[in-house]
Image 1 (cartoon, helix red, strand yellow):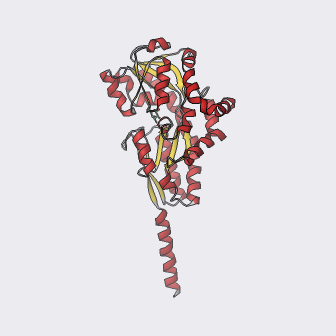
Image 2: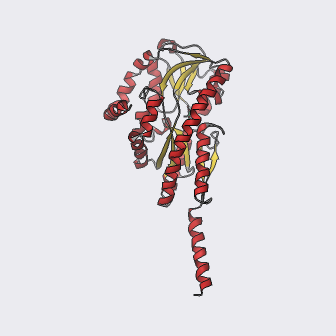
Image 3: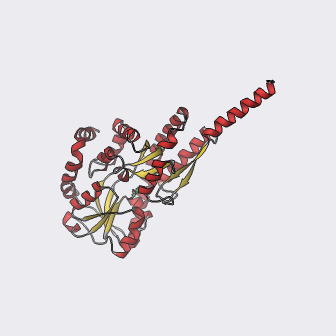
Length: 322
Ligand code: GTR
C-alpha cells in the first residue's frame, strides 16, 4: 500500500466511525417553545453539538406534537423518541419505584425537593429507572414546582371539593390523592383538559402556575387557584435505552454531564417563570386563595400509608434530608 492509499483508508475509516455515531436526536416535550424545560433541553442539545463537532444534535418537538406524555414515554421506550422531558407522574405506571416522589406532600417544600433530587436519593432513583426493564435511562431531574388546585367555584377546605370532578395525571396515586382530598379524581391527558373544562366534563384541575397559564385553562372557566401545594413532583429527563446502548462511553458521559447542567439551568429559568406567570395569572383575573393546607395534608395520610408502605425506609431518608 502506498502512503496515499493508507492515508485515504484511514480517512474513510474515520469518517465511517464518525457517521456511525452521528445522529440528530428527537427531543420531545408537551410544553411550548420558551417554557423552561424546553429551553434547558434545547441548550443541552447545543452544548452536545458543540462538544461533538456536530456529531450529536437535538431536534426539539415541543407542544405535544409527538403525543401526550403517556404516548411519548412509549415512543421513547422503543427508540422512536430519543430524549424525553416528562413529569415523573406518568413514569410511575412504567417504573413503580419512582412513585415515592409522586406521593402527596412527600416533600416539605421546593428547597427540600431540590435537596433530595440533587443528592444521593435523586441519583438512586435515576439509577432505578435505568436498571428497570422499562428501556429508559434516567438522565437528570427538572423542577416542576408545586401543584395546586384550580376550579370554577372557590375551594377552601376538603368539603368544598365534594362532587367536583378534578383532572389528575394518569397514575392511580393521583386519582387516590384527589379522592382523599374530597373531590372526584379523573385521570386524563394534559391536552384534553381545556375542552373538558369548557364542556363541563371537569370542574377543575391542578398544576403549577406556568402550566396553568400556558394551557389557558383559566379561560375555560377555572378562575380560582387554591394554594393546596399538594404535589411537588419533579420532572425528569430520560433517554431511550435503545439510543443509549449505541453510544460510545465517552458520549454517554457527555450526555450525563450536559443533562446535569440542564437540571441546574432549568431551575433558574423555572423560578423566573413561576414569578412571571403568577403575575400574569393575577392580571387575567385568577383569584389566588391562600389557605392553611393542613386539612388536605391530613386527608391524604391514607394515600401516603397505602403507597408509602413499601418505601418506609426511603421515606424516612427523604424526611431526614435538610
Ligand atoms: C406539567 C408538567 C407536564 C405534565 C403536565 C400535566 O406541570 O410539566 O410534564 O405532566 O403538568 O399535568 O400533565
